[in-house]
Image (cartoon, rainbow, N blue to C red; front, top):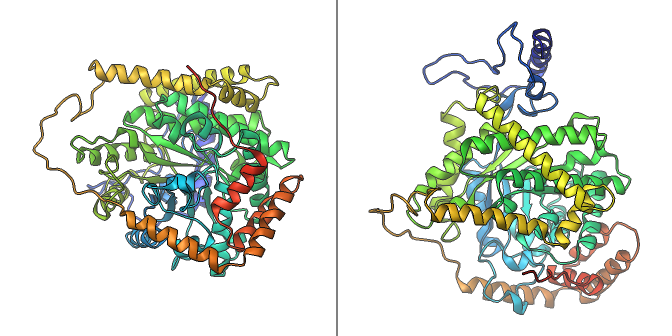
Length: 557
């Protein structure tokens, strides 16, 4: 790019920056030195290939979505939390919000994630242990009691039974008196990554995609601020994928959902802004920064050039980041505070829109109140003390970071082509479905995980406290334990609610939902009615299992 084009781009950025809202804050160094909101090539200097780097708030968005960076608004501190029952988790949410958290992120227990009620025989021993138990809309009422859902953005990390859980959230908001059209938040709903990595599915892919399409339509028309899909790379990376695989598989899944929306006749400029992403921030600092920057650039280009998005918001890749759970160690767990801080810093320097920082004891158990506070304070120290919010994309133009960004982008593009080549009709969706069917994704991830594990065991890769620097004077941590009494009480509560409800209304609502499932009509309104009648999550999902069957992963050797 020649000097005149660079100067014109800087002028465009300056005009946008001047018009944008800025926070009232001190944008100087610790020593009191004024810093510019953005840095770029020196005046009059040519920079070949600068169009791939560009300016914040401008295509291809490598340097961020907003001209102000974090001077306009900082990232949302969104701590992932959920354990025990709705009462206990509600207390944790109030602690997080009271300590400065900017939004909620719900962790559900395994029975809920699998669409099972707490009194289902398959739920025995799992209720409330890895997240909060939610059986019906009444539990959602308690979970968000005293929290204004119209004012707090709420993320829910659940995919298989995401749509009925979302309906329960809407019912809880209705009962608060909220105007549903004003709700804001994110539902994960990403079923592709379940088949690829996490394995929390209910049905074959096609019924899940039908429900996701219905949800996309419903939110586009009724709740425009709510994001019905958070395409997740986090679980893909945690399963052992490389950074490039995480990026490519995640964006490919996103392209698949774009193709789903287009197949429903939706306007890409209307529904695409409702897609968001969820990435892992792993321990390799610069690789992660490059991954985030490449993600924005790839998504913007594909949305514009492949799927025809003309609005900037439809080309934006907005993403939440969580620090890498798989990087945490049971050995010398206090070291996990350092790992989490480094990973969080990479997410911020990569331009994340919201962030969860893991607690030091999460490799052993659910976080205690104290460790959860340390995790929260980690973000606040980064935000308030380090000066990283003062300059947009401060590493932009770094030879190393730009080279890594280009390399990860090229690796991702090669993987996209491999996915397309697996399909039968030239679409990404066809390639994804074939890759799920023949186990290609899981095989590729397993190979990457094996290579890393072998390097670790041979000492080529090192983890402090695990295969080097293993001596310690640290004492064992006091960890949080969820009492089995939680399960007994949740089962008793669920059975009492079943006794008190209008069973005829529940049966009629469930039958209406199944009747709608046999048509092309949107299923969300009928599912909402079932939740209003206090149909349980297990009852809704079992009715659909009876209609659609269940998915069983083929045995592979």
